[in-house]
Amino acid sequence: MIYFGIISCILIHFAHIVDAAYVVSIPAKDEECFVIGSTGAAGAVLTGNYDHLDDSLSSEPLSVVIIDAKEEHVLFRSRRRATEGSFRVNLKADQKVNLCLQNGLVTAGRGRTTPSARSHDGKPRTIGFGYTVEAKDENQEVHTQNNRNLAAAADLSRSLSNLINHHQYMRNREGQHREIVEKTFAQLMWWVILEALFVVGIAGAQILYFRNFLEKRRYM
Image (cartoon, rainbow, N blue to C red; front, side):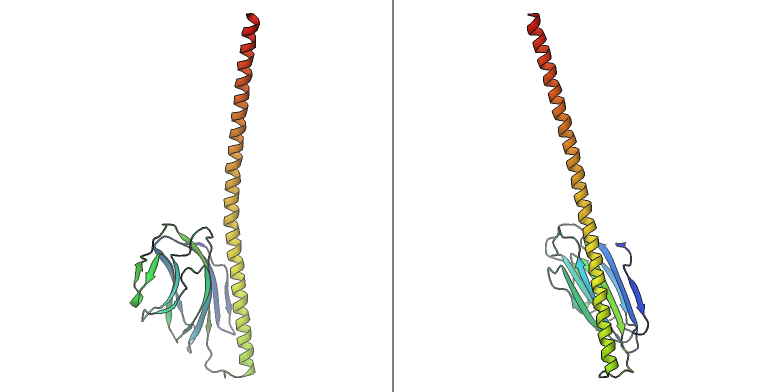
């Protein structure tokens, strides 16, 4: 389930770049997939990054895979136990791929997914990820200075996009931590109040007891 909408969506027309980022919550033994297509007649380059945002949970059941939508073979698979990483895939003309974020699933041959044999804690995982699709231009010469400048500018744009995405992931993680700390402080405050009431009650009971005791002694 996507619970934080698009962080950024940028269209750079001169370079034919589509840039987007999301934060998604993936239920246990489930997956979230996004269909991404090539934007140019000469193909495109798909690049991106991902980051596991739940610091208190293990990244063992998580995996990120990119699968060709037609031939259903795996083009990219994330490293096991990786909490973050990046990917780069060359797309052919009119090629579509499925970018899948998996929590406790394993993608086998022909794109089939099965539950992992490894144990799972049954908890959802939150992943922030972003991707960029940059169309190739078949009319440009590869070795010209203009091309090198455009390539450098595109690399800089991707790096800035990754930096912005990671900054947003950190803000999201900080918000989660702040919420946990505030709940802990609230629980501690109620516990202190209960302790104070208990102490006041015990003190009042002791005062009444000694008062009655001294009054009995005086009458005797």
